[in-house]
Length: 403
Image (cartoon, rainbow, N blue to C red; front, side, top):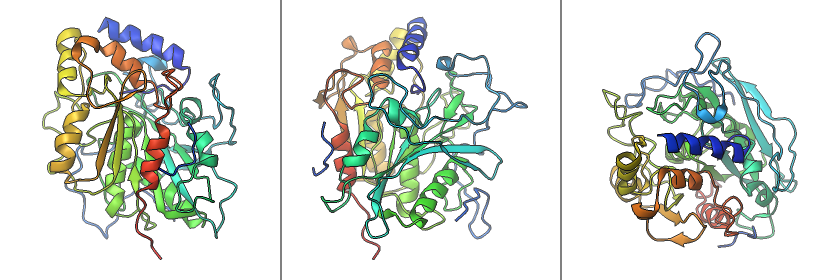
């Protein structure tokens, strides 16, 4: 599923046309090459047998996400701006994006906010933000969430007198996407699931290196490394968190907890037509604390009844694993053996609820609109901000002290 990259209003218009055609958080409202490591056995359970291919001049992406408004994509990288561009949001400018070239020669970018109070004697938490797919961009953290405001004031550590956290927003690569629906564009690859320490998934290796570099600089609290994500970024956040909760990065760091928005099963098949299936069997096991927030009517369907209704009533194909209820109620507790998952369901108008919307009031169009609205109470106009609950959850689940 996609999340907006640029103008949210323009994107909604485009996507709606497509669908119709088919608690102590003072927040207020090393060189990871990504190549194989001969010290580890080769992975035997990776889902997709190789990483998703990048778009390039010689291998252009010809099934671009419609909101990109292009016929093809020929560049593997998109350079984000690390500042606010959306009207109605507080203005921040964190300067030029971080840049590196990965082991495959692809330019990689990220935006970073460093709280001024961080020091070697006052190490502060790290929150990684992963944008949605299609036209998604690292700048979405400024334009469509309130996390940049909270990064300066929110207490995520044990000491209430030490506010602030590092906020790292990762830019995905431009990828050939393997789903039934046309989704080539900016993504984080959760279909190639090499979860080893020396992962050959370029997106896992890239995030590993960012985390290791920040911890090595001596300002990040290694017991409080958290990941948040939206849509495609939410799927990747869960896969990465499960991979790195027990198995460390090359630099020895682990993820304490994750809080994704509108995502579900990151270990399922790429599409219903893919044979043999790339769904993992078995799933990796993990006790990673997960707080998943999603809408009661969402294009990542709240339950199977919604997914079935989207297809039978509107011809909208829901990809495998893009249904929340079976992921939370069955796959996480049974396949992943995870007792530490929490699901917060939010209505389209921001209220917390205990049930998915009935099909009589939920259409793919409404689900898509809800999907595009990060739950901070701004885009949905509700004024009900769920970010404090998400950040409180993260704060309550640090790793044990490494001292």
